[in-house]
Length: 193
Image (cartoon, rainbow, N blue to C red; front, top):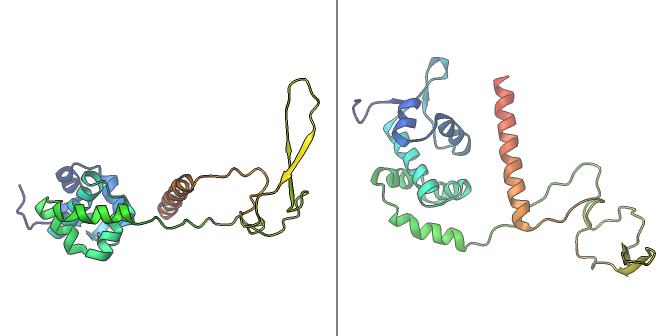
């Protein structure tokens, strides 16, 4: 057994926190505050304060239900010492109020990136129907299909490209988070190559 103030390898820390090693490496990409010492060959050595910070992050994510962004916000607003203190004490009582405040905050409106070559929402994209009407087919049993014209959606609504499926705000958020994670994974893979 090592002394409490001894440096620990990633395998020792992963075992102590009951986490896979790849999770610790992933957290390094998400939390700039995690900075283990790296020796020749890239081997990581964690200081006791690094382990306390990791323990605090684990507690916030897994026990308190914070998101990664929520923990990033706590680190930014309260500081590393606060999260490391949570990790040292194992106490989440001061954190419960912060989590409740996080849940009460309105989520920011996500910004969707415009694909190259597509017109900006609300601009004339040259589709075949003017802004005053949208053609919608109707299907009735026993009658020939005849297009029916209905008033268009008010001009304040964004115009979607042909074939686009409107998504709820929550679905867009989930897709953006997944895309962000995939881009980060691609960046990490490109570094390895």
